Length: 170
Length: 170
DNA sequence: TATTGTTATACTCTATAACTATA
DNA sequence: TATAGTTATAGAGTATAACAATA
Image (cartoon, rainbow over all chains, first blue to last red; front, side, top):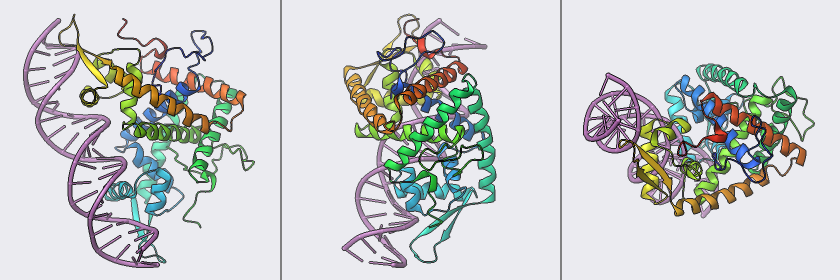
C-alpha cells in the first residue's frame, strides 16, 4: 500500500533531503512497485508479461504439476491452465502427462523458453543495477540479506520451502 | 524475474540453512512478489484490486490530472480513464473539471475512498509485520533505508521527485 | 467420494487507434 | 497544430462454477 501515500510518515527519520526514509511500510510498497515496474518493462521488451516470465523462471529447474504451480503462484488452477496454455501456444513450455497419475500433468520449459528467460533475466539484472547504483556495497549486502529473509519467510508462511522447492524431484 | 529461478546462485553467500541469501537480483524479485502478494490479498479482502488501492493512496494527499496519474503509474492515459471510471462508479473518487484548462480534469478521493484506503493500509501494515518478524530491529532499519533509496532512485529516473510529488499544489 | 485438470463465462486491467474538445 | 481526455476494440489475466477423467 502506501503508494506515495504520505510524503513524510510520522515515524520516518528526519530527511536530509537526499536520503529520506519513507518508513518500512511505504518503503517496501514503493520498492515492490519499482521492481515490478522494471520486471514489466523487461518482459514487455521480450513480448511477454511479468507472470509469463515468472512462470519460466520457476520452470527453469523444476517441472511441477498445474496444482503445484497454482499453490506457488497463489492462483486458481483454472488461471494456471490458461497461463500454461498461452505459454505452450508460444512454444515456451510443454505439458507432459504423468506416468503414475493419469489425471496429472507436468509442465516443462522448452529451449525457446529457457532462452527467453535467460535474456530477460540479464536485462532485469541490468535494470536493477541502475536502481541500486546509489547504494553502498554494504547497503547492497544488507538489502540482499533482508530481502532474502522476507522472501523465505513469505514462502514458509505459505507452506513452501523456497530453497528446496522441487516437486519434480520428490 | 528469478522467481525461484536458482536455488543457489553462484554469487550467493554460503547458506547456513536458515539465513540463506538469494543474491540481490533474486532477493529483490522475490521480495517484490511477496509484497505484491500481500497487497493483492489485502485489497481483495476489501473487494478492490491492487491498482485501485494504489490509486487511492496516491490521491490521499494529491489531486492530479489524468495525464499526471498516467505518468506516475506508467500507464497509458486511456488505461487511467478506465481505472478512474471504475473507481468513480464505486464512489471512491470524483472527477473535478479544471478551472483554467477546460480540457483537463482533476481526480480527488471521496470520504468513502479514504476510509477504504485507511482500512486497507492498516491490514497491509499487519501483513508486513508478519513478514518482517524475523528481522532484527537493525535489519529493519537497514531495509527501510535501502528500500527508500531504491524507490526514490526509481522515481527520479522517471523524472519524478517522489518526496515532493504534488501536481495539485503546483 | 475426492482429486486433477479443463471449459464456459464474466470481469478487471491494459494498450492501440481514432475521436472530441479545448488550447 | 498540439494537448487533455474519452471511446472503441482487442487481448491478457484472473476467479467462479460446472464438468470430465481418474483415483
